[in-house]
Image (cartoon, rainbow, N blue to C red):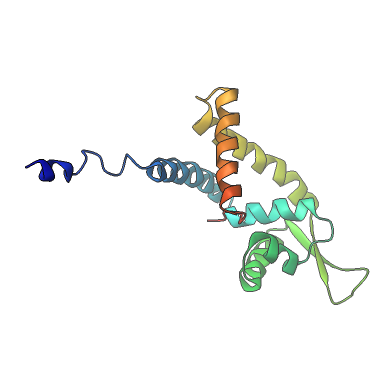
Length: 157
């Protein structure tokens, strides 16, 4: 009888796992942001790409693919979409005419701060109940886990 009691399934077997809570919150945080971007006809991958392009004046599609841990084919589609939306342009590299550098258009430069504000609003919605110290500690713990497990890929979906 004792043996059967020790094998009993907890009332909430999922809820005892940290991974459950992390995934639950993460899905809602990222889903909400993805929906907000979708209203602007942008994907999370496009948002991430715009941020990378802004940071590096000499970025090529191949560099972008490496930075985002995506295939060149997948990046090509993202770059094409951003170019059609007039958020970025491709210009020939002054050092190598075969290479095309990606840069933000004036429209892209105006759009990115608005998208960042949306990300800030999304964070505030989900994490606003945490005080500053709690937010800092949560970020520190998540960064520690990412470092320990060498997780450096940028989430794009």
